[in-house]
Figure 1 (cartoon, rainbow, N blue to C red):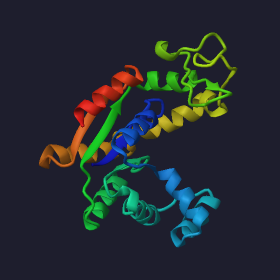
Figure 2: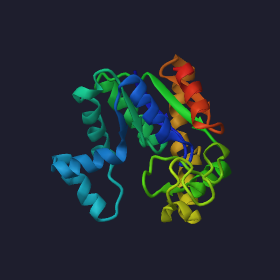
Figure 3: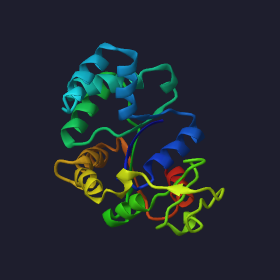
Figure 4: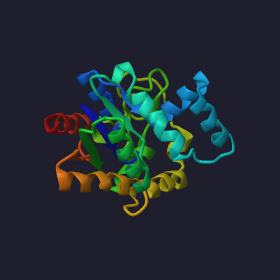
Length: 224
């Protein structure tokens, strides 16, 4: 089962990806991690990517997509994979689709988590990190995981915030890219949605991201 995952920052996409990784024993592949891995290993593509990154430029699709294809063809992906973080615009979606088909890699399912932009922003700004274990979920805007005052709801340890979680301007910039249905990330998701409507492949699944983690996970698994 090969899955492409979409969802705005704050939608719980990473959490749901981890759940699928454990349930189906497939790797959760994030585009950022692919860059880091290639750079650390000193691959030819990694060196090319680093040259752009060091200048503060975006890595061209001609480098990014071959990196992604190489990762999807590794042994741990034999039973399937979950790709997250790419594509981010419609042109990248077209190129990724073409590259997957040329490589004989089927894209089975595209998942889109739908969440109101304001709710997504509040969830990011409401995140609190346990100093003992960052995996302990605490969020002042989500009743199910609301911390006990300024203490972790799981273990009672102190909580802290990430600076970038409190930067409303930075969050808005990321969301501007994601929610743009003409040239942004949603435009790339809708490219696959259109393919699904025309041919039935890949299967396109939408999820309501508003409920809690368990409820969203249950809906996701039931639709897969």
